[in-house]
Length: 311
Image (cartoon, rainbow, N blue to C red; front, side, top):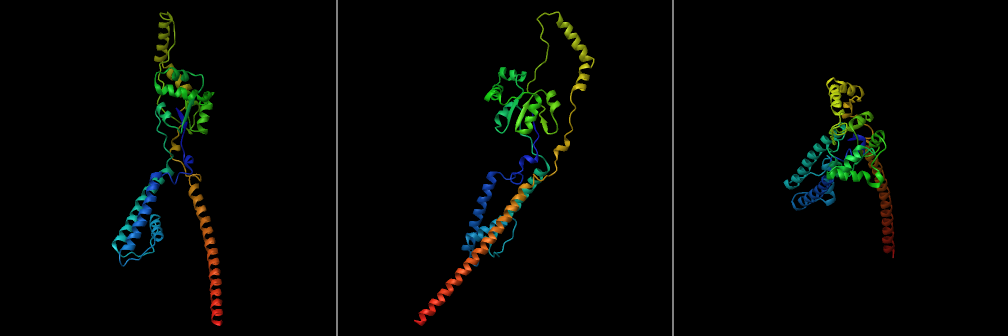
């Protein structure tokens, strides 16, 4: 099996969010609401404590989770206990997030957990196939194993859309989509580079032999010749001569951080800056309109009072 080697470019939009899964984000949102309610109740029920609105407690809790200090001085234990718990959660969250983020940026993504055709069938994100009209197709078709039969049906579906015309086309397809190509190791090595990963496990182990008529006099002659070739090292020399060299792809295990990996936070920062400017402009316009309306209302009230006194 040959597939494309994962890289940081595959997770451009998820590099800075994959550390937290959906259930973790949901728990953080629930924690913000719960701590905001707890801090609100503590400030409202404890004497000698400043009464805070829910919006103020929400801002304090959210700011604490973002590593910001608090502008309110809490004097009693219940409010301090809630705030210290939020700060402790922020430390744990930040430690987990940064440790995972450093590993994600320095090491490419791990390969999918694939070791058999059954794993391919259970992974809906991957498609797979092989070269059409080859022995692999016949092997899958005639195999008594259920997963092989399912793999054959998958390849033959939609008019054989999972099949390719050649090894070169199959290896090129792995670079364009989430496609796993099946072929013999010799052909895979001749068309692969460091962008590919070839899983070392052989899935179709079979003995290669010459088919002769039963009790043929050629059988001992073939056996003698093959034994002589193997004992003399001819097969080993042929393999060394014609087998493609193994590529040294150790440099691909650690990749340099590119712009595509850090594009998401810069885009988010730009959007927040634009939103901040828009909010400031809206607030300035609202204050101007509110001040003008208040001035007009005050002048109207003064004029009405003077007219009433005159009358």
